[in-house]
Length: 310
Image 1 (cartoon, one colour):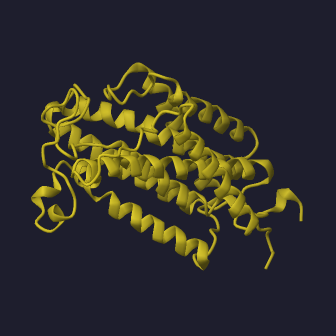
Image 2 (cartoon, helix red, strand yellow):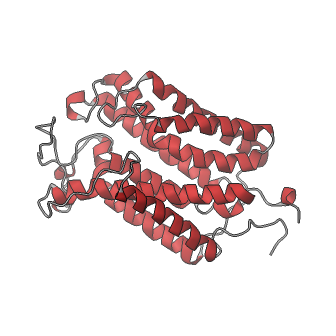
Image 3 (cartoon, one colour):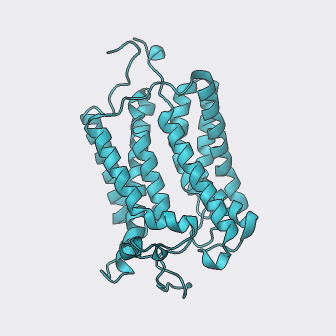
């Protein structure tokens, strides 16, 4: 069967990722709007505008990175001229990697954040067009070892993210009788420039960014086999890289807050938010390549299903 007659990718996983980020963005906006800046981390604004600004930064990092993968799926659905629009939106999203666009030491919104956010907005519009034209479409049935592994990893990531979810909602787990005995949260643990900071500061964490990247990658990895040709290869590697990068940042933040600050160990995992020439980043790239190669070998990233195929 010709490539033009192959089944186009379904949008169930894409919509799931959009809903996930929509919920998180709303949480961030509300929490940063209602709490004073002094109780948050590296922000100066507060109130409605402060919350909107922090939500805008969230649209840049990590959502713009995830939107690149979402755009690849949507482009394969729409094709033609709209695929070029998707490419332009992806280029806008890539601007988030330019130094200074998102600065972990200054998380207030700036003018440069508008461009990646515009790319994300275009991705939302294109997703809506794809949905209007062809519906959600067919998704791969859930089952088998790969989906069980995805589900197990997702549950583990969510459980490890409980302190960040609470902080994002604006409270410490030290206020929860059972969870305060499991997780560090409201205990004061000073850092350079933050003498009164708690073990898990209120608001959004880069560990949560990592968790969101990893969860999005797990969902979108189910769609990769439905993508055509070279785009499938590129998307497969990007999704694998997104997963490893996200998991590495979630682990680094969890390790610091739950183990180092508890006094369990003094060994710290280096920050991996910004790509650098380092052993840590070499390990991230190698791990992504290994995951993609392994998935390809076992058929997870094999040829996309064809219409009428059993």
